[in-house]
Image (cartoon, rainbow, N blue to C red; front, top):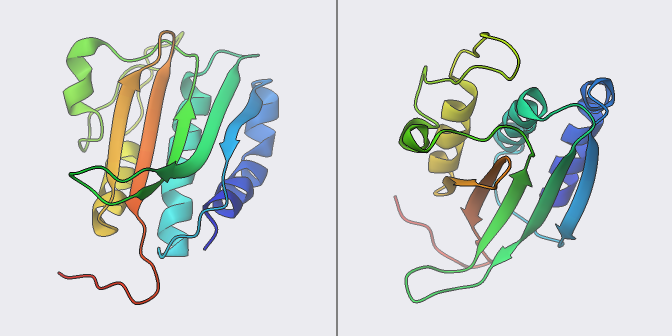
Length: 160
């Protein structure tokens, strides 16, 4: 499955919410990357990440997206990634370790309302099921989230 196509489909589904917030989507990188992944799970992970960004991004701001391949290192093979950056309030430094844990949530900007704390936990679970990784970084302002998956080529072996 093409990772860019999965992101585009999710953006189309969230188009009304993006418009309500007057959010602009800007692609910084749009590489043609094919993944061997469960399409429904991947769509759910991308949707949860984008929905979270929409909830925290200030009206009229930008969501910056990237799809590409992380080069191989001594420690790991190349990986496909989806990266999303919002320009919201970010996450307090002490909360980074808890992001993606079940039932952990921070208040939405301008309110005391919190989410269920399940969206990012679901994304982390989907990443794990695909031998991937979910990472968070401060973006000053905002938050950068990267979802990375191993690239499997024809004939490659996977072990359990």
